[in-house]
Length: 159
Image (tube, rainbow, N blue to C red; front, side):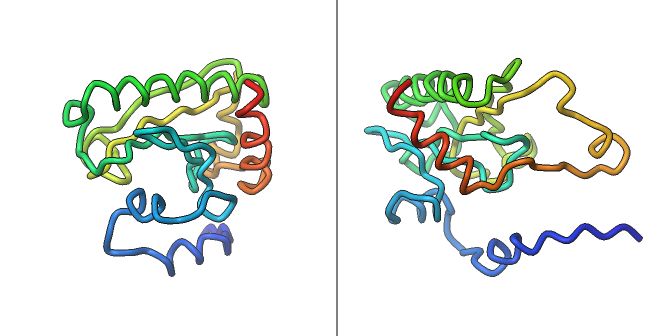
């Protein structure tokens, strides 16, 4: 039996709510506790609490809507602009080789928060799927979320 200890996940397990995590976050003050990097007029940028790679951020519509086509044109435009700006920030801080940018619309498509549309911006590096992922099916994150948050928040205004 393989065991991987991840005691930091207990906070997540114990704080699950019946509502929408993205709607609840909008009621909170921005900072390292909720990982909101920036708020726009219609959307906000937040770090993924369970990232694929360091710097994995999401652009989330303020409105609780299931899909991109349920949003007005201004919100969709702001989402894409913030995703593009996020790529620039990530490029300046982490120097990735590439990006995955996309939305999982609906539970069958892999959406973790299926009812509240959001776009993932994931920095990628050549060879970032190392032996730990390939052989042990374990992802090693080289940086704490609080450090990632501080680095990206500081860089956002300068990019």
